[in-house]
Image 1: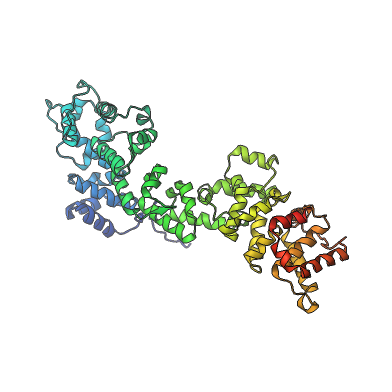
Image 2 (image 1 turned 180 degrees about the vertical axis):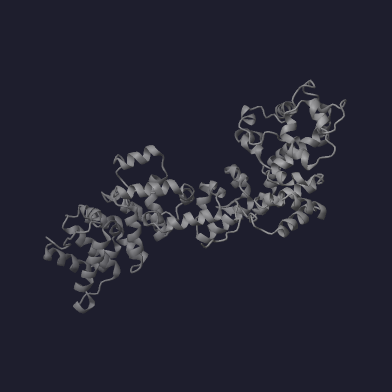
Amino acid sequence: MFSLSFPNKFPMICRGKSVLYFCTHVHISNLLTKHLNLSPNGIKKLNTLEKDVCITKIPENQIIRSCKILQNMNVDLEQVEFLASCLKLQPIIIKNRIAILKEMGVKSISLKHIYRFPEAMRKSLKSFKIMYDIPVNEDIMQNLVQYLRMMTNKDYESPIEIKSTTRAGDFYEMCMLYYKTIYLNLRDPSFYKNRKLKYQSFTEMFKLINVLKTKCKFDDEFLKDHPYLLNLDADNIEEFLTELKSFNRNGKDIYDFIKKFPRTLFSEVSKAKELIELYNLLGIPPQALSSYATAFKMEKEVFLERYINIANRCDLSIWLQHRRVLSMVYYYKMVINRATYLTLLSNLYNPNIQTFLSNKIYFSRFTEGEIFYTAIKKHLLYILRKELGEDKTYVIDAIMRHPYWKHVSLVHIDRMLRCLKKYYSVDDICINVHIILYPRSKVVKVLNLLRQEYSLENGYKFTPAQYLALCLYKLEKKYHFSGDAVWQTMQTNMPNYNSNTFKDLSPNESDRFVEYIRSNDNIFFNVSEVAWLEYLLR
């Protein structure tokens, strides 16, 4: 009876800063007029053929870069019906196609020539000449040799004898192989396998080699170890180095950084700048980027969403200041799946960051109980450095003397430190550092009882450090100072767990210890944390 009218066109947002599908023709026309100098007649013809609809699906940044290439390389824009098909290509592909055609002797290049380039390279040299109006008696090999001489100021010999039936693509690849092997000394087979670009022009190759050696300071041995760098766009490298010239991490500039992580040169400079600003805003440590530069490939929105989700999980948020935090964000799906699986096993608080990022074999060993400890010195140092400061990491020696320090959850230690810092100074915590290994609920309960029993109204005048020491004493007293009190941590998450901390505790022994603290203030504060642990575990 009633009908709803829906528009016949829906918005589509492509990857990157794309133009919307339903965007007005005016915006497309402005882009092509501004960056390509397309005539009004060309715009009108494009609208008549409805080719501008296809252009709306292309990212705007790609449109601008491709238009600049077409304009700078003097491409004939008369056959505007092929413009949309050309703009769909990546800018580096357009650039190489135009350069290759020029090197092989094509005098005037049109949009149709760029679009039909793959078809032309499958034809014989004889048909190629006819297709691009090259004189039959003109030698394409001599065109290439002459072009190389002009580019490098060196003498080149004709590498091979060719027949008119040889395919144009095969011929050009043989010439490129000869150039790389003889004149660039790139003899390693890895330079010719798994290439990203099937056809790469001599112009772009020569420019790329020059940028890599002069600006990036890569020598021949480095290029041999990283042959994939020959798939880069020289203009993108220069833009990358220019925009990130102020980059500095751990005293290393952008040149040191790309030498350690050369694959970052494949990243878009705009994305890289946005991510670096985001890293600084979120307080991600500089070591994180130095240890995992692959995160440059991520979109800003995707990174932020993953980072927030990790920050909202108590088992993962403690690693936000770790140098491998970018790895956690990059492998987000794997990390979340493992955290979910460990939750089902009731083993959520035992893993460390290595458990989430390790290979399948290590993770399987952990879930099966073969790897039974949770704390590792470097991970515990990370938490101490994060919460207490770099100058307090010496307490690790005292903690490691506890017999069960490896079995206490790092999540628990992190929570305990943040809880204690709200009420006690860092120095007070360091003096009684072993208290971070004990159950938080037990520590809070005992401290509340101690402040009631040994309050100022009852004639006691204890310092915060002394309250922590007395709490530690009472926790371990019924276990004969063996360290077994930490095992109560495993029970804190059980819903029906009720215990009496002072059960079986001798009042006289506790009072003697309290009186010892009251009457020996100086002696107590001169005792180091190692001596205090020895006293507890004597």
